[in-house]
Length: 251
Image 1 (tube, rainbow, N blue to C red):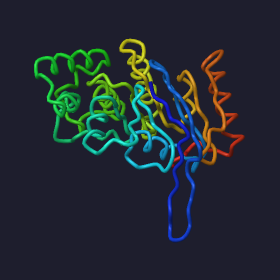
Image 2 (cartoon, rainbow, N blue to C red):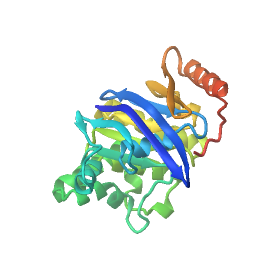
Image 3 (cartoon, rainbow, N blue to C red):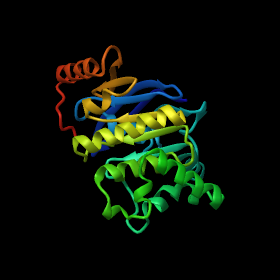
Image 4 (cartoon, helix red, strand yellow):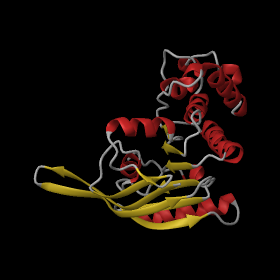
């Protein structure tokens, strides 16, 4: 579904070149919930931005549904982002002047989808995520957890190949964090969603099928969920501590 092959990215400041990603390769299968973790400066956010092609990379490929999207022009990329990718951001990125329902409909509006089918699909997704009672409210009137569940619902409107989530629980309390993770799990279970999440939050990552660990711009290792969720989280915490990570990674 999503494959990254030998990806490299660096930044230049004056005469200095700073490598951020070095020969990163990974694969996410259809229906998987995969997280990327690592210490601050390990390249997690840069990796996500390269996968979405918001920033260019120097070497390697990003393949989505077996298409190399790395060399597409901006018009083609915009179409891929709208129809084949869903995005969930730490800061929600909801439009304040639109209701919850209108925010959820936005990807279909941009894609010029048929109105009747669009509205029916949005209502079904709202029911799925338990936010039908706030459909007519505006972002300023709802909680952080409700905003993020709205963002997850919006990301699913075009049935994308993959949802890319950038620190989706970073600004939330523990109750809201669990509500968002439950929304991801529900999307995976009932809609077959594929989710690729960058996070510093071991609690959120412990619900994933796999966690890919970055260190110094390279894949350091991979942990697969085995045993209980608590045991998996303890393993993640041990790994991050070994790498020198912390609990407040705002990379």
